[in-house]
Amino acid sequence: MASGEAGSEANGRVTAAVLIIGDEILSGRTQDTNLRDIAKHLAVYGVDLAEARTVPDVHEEIIAALDALRGRYDYVITTGGIGPTHDDITADAVAAAFGVELQEHPEIIAIMVARRGPDLNAAVRRMARVPVGGALVKGPGQSPPGFTIGNVFVLAGVPQVMRAMLEDVGPRLKGGAVTVSRTVRVEGFGESLIAEPLEAVAKAHPAMSLGSYPFFSAEGYGSNLVLRGRDPEELEATVGELIVALQVAGVSNAREIDAL
Image 1 (tube, one colour):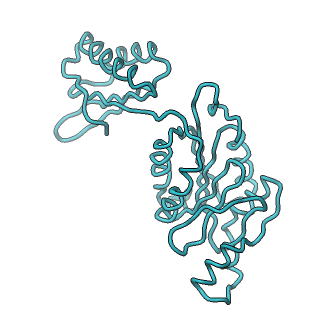
Image 2 (cartoon, helix red, strand yellow; image 1 turned 135 degrees about the horizontal axis):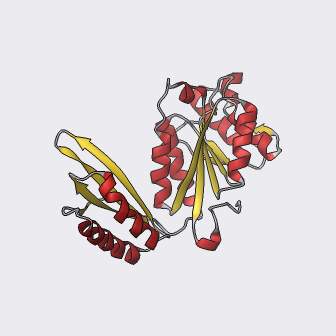
């Protein structure tokens, strides 16, 4: 495991980064939903998603991003670029980043033979390549697996396939303390009035994350103030402190609501 910048066992925080690979994401032709799903899945295991990057299908750029992220965080999850076409080069780039060769994995070949018959063409066999030393990450049904090597998990870009692979990733993670969130809702007041009490409470609790998320609708406007932390007792106390601080500032209707 990498000694991550934020992934530090010293402060008990376990971190991950997501590397989204694909020209189709950068061009806007495909809307990414994987980042949201990965963040939610990691949170269950007490792993913080600390950074996300999107890179094109360019060998050198994938390697550069991967090297930067895997040395900085405890885990890296990549999505995309492990299909059968010429521009699916993620496996090649990951192998190059780790300085190993690619080889056809017999288990993947067996899965494909069971699904397609014994005559596999070169495009299909392309999806069976795994870096030497890598282990498989199960996919759904008879879909080709992803793989993991070092602290990197290489998953499909297709959302439903990626989500199934995540189920095999989660139990392999060395998780940290799970982050809990609470939400305080303010209606009819702008962020300019909320900012000062929110900042004061945030400074008093540096181990916690406090953020303001404005909303606007036909019914009115306001902000959801989201508090996140690992210590439930501190979180409980901070919610109370924030509501009192807002009331002192003139925000009379601040109240806690169910987490969004």
